[in-house]
Image (cartoon, rainbow, N blue to C red; front, side, top):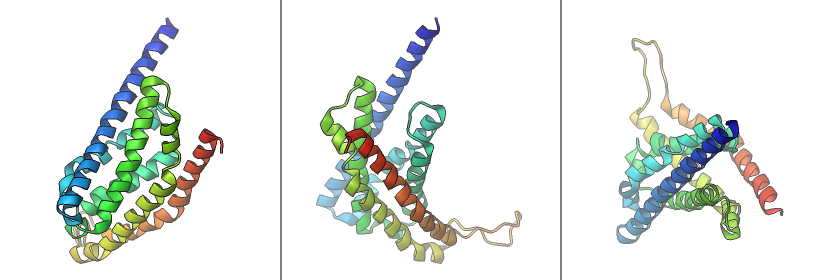
Length: 221
């Protein structure tokens, strides 16, 4: 009886993760298509507006991956998932969504293309693995090799966009709480952004080192 229930739970888990991974993969594929089409037809200044809604949705969907780790549905450690998801959420919601001045920066297109390429490979890898209990070697290789270039490019773009947003954050006072107020509380978003930049310093080698160890373990090189 217990083995039967365990088998049913395992099947449901695999079905859920398969659907989740392929749906989010399709979302990132749509973002890549819209970004490349807009980049070709209208230029980088219009890319963000063309992809804003699907980008916010697809990146926010990554929050489920934190829950998956907490619930034991996947083996990915929270220590690797949480900082990556949090940093990207901060960039899309905390920077791009709030500051239109940064939305037209050329690095937005570059960052989004790096993100899309990474995520299409990653989600298709896990979708195939969960759905078929098997992944072809070429997809395995892409999953654990393309990050060598795409991660540094994506992270460099994130850091650069946050840095470029600093003058607009300071000037606008957006998301800051000034005294006096009924809560007797103040919050300066400008210094918060600087602290986020500081978190990247230990975060980058931690995430990159984790992926390098996974690559060595998986590809046996």
